[in-house]
Length: 462
Image (cartoon, rainbow, N blue to C red):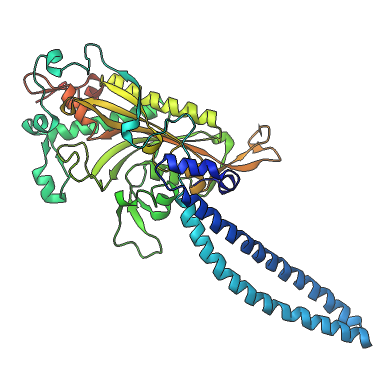
């Protein structure tokens, strides 16, 4: 959610921001129009409340004077008292009329407000789609060049992961489809063990090496958490809504990322500045409908409805420089992990049209996948500033000059935090580059050295 005051002061910033993200700039004007109609009515409500409070005090004062008054003075005071006592009923009628208008306009404003995308940072390239993303860098293990044929470098024709894992009895699509429908899979034997090894390795790296706090993030959340993290209303078509909610007055949905549970953990809280940054990691099962992906990546493990993901989230002070430093640092954690797995990858700067509504900036990390004869997205690192925290109402008490001991000095004010998130490892998608890059001429799969401790020391699958 954007800062409404900033939108009033700088509407062109948001019109341009919406246009650059393939949105509707006219929606900004619709929001401003509703906001302009609503604000005077809210002021009128406040004035009526103030008038009621004033009348209450005046009635109390008159009552005291009436006890002592006589003759004409008493009659005049009684007449004044009658007028004052009649006014609250008039105010009640006016308040009822205003309340209906304010309620409807507030609903319209909030609906439009939630729909306004965060403008991209000025250094993000303007573009319409992923086709306009810009390659920033590449990394390759010694002895491998993705620009050259796999066979020329490895000495044999590679199998795709579906064939390779199928031949080794590591993967079953047919029975999975019988159980869960299209885009489903069952990982078997060492295939499932490799999946778990990837997740454990990524999770342990974030906790033991990078010092992140482990949290179990709920995959089933209230709709308010989805709104708060920016997945509703945008992106609702990708989410599995629960058709039979609890009946306790709120809807529920299955999350497509652990980011939702990690961010909502501090919803409606004021955090001590001295406790920032908060750095969390989780392993969670994720669900995505993949709406609009009909006929796209239908074979294999690349685009499935259910997967497991290690996620990292940082909540920090409202400082752009600090946010940018964390963004780079979080990407560095992933680069280190991929390099130790010896997987070729590249960093892509996402253009404005590929950022989505909530991101000020996003860097994708794509691993080389021989079966695709190209790179495939495996990670996304997002910088959101206060877009999510404003929706989730996560603030900290910002000191005016510092913190004294364990307390905040006088003059501190509440400020919305900044937030960032980045995939650490999502499997089974990450299994694609692993098994395809580590396949051998005899059809077996070498277990990456970094994962062998998580496979009981096993160095070969098959």
